[in-house]
Length: 269
Image 1 (cartoon, rainbow, N blue to C red):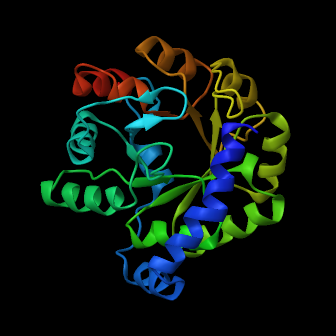
Image 2: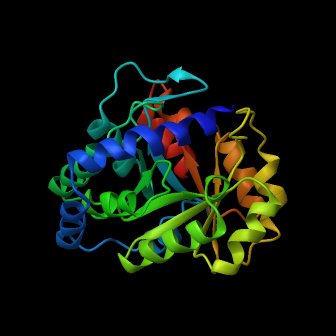
């Protein structure tokens, strides 16, 4: 069994049933309906490109299954503020607790914190988690997410289509993540606005930056294309920009940096 299989099994059979008992689905749907309208995530990426022409989605991330604890002094609000002030076009928030030490309430807390700062431009928020049930989509909207992640590798075609339709109905964007051309061919008929290619193999956690470059040619220009994982430097960003990548999602390189603000400015251009 791979770590991905383990994560999905745990979430389906233990975490999600417990969450539904703690907060009934009807309550979560009601909270989602009362949430403030979401920002246009894709438009924010298009408008938030730096000098390189690539927009940065900066990730609030404390740990990972492959690397363990990434940041000992972890303050999600402080990180989000540094990201916003440093030029990130959007912010990704890991909400998985067991494997990434995230929390769902980080989303709502960050949204409130950034609103108080009265920034000229408030980056929209992406819920980063392993989403497979409509309940999680409503949870994301109720917590203030403007977008969420859907991973093609863990969803059947019908599940992916249904979750994407619900996401759109609630006004959010879906970053649909793929790892292979076969997965991409399953996704493109759904006419996505946003596609991400994860350079990290979710089965063995190896990373290859060429993965997203090889798949870029198969994605229409009007679809916002996001490269995920394995991006550490301005040189990486320049390389991806030259290949027509629209945006990058970066977590580890930021949270491990000694000077987070400086690293944000480097990658955001």
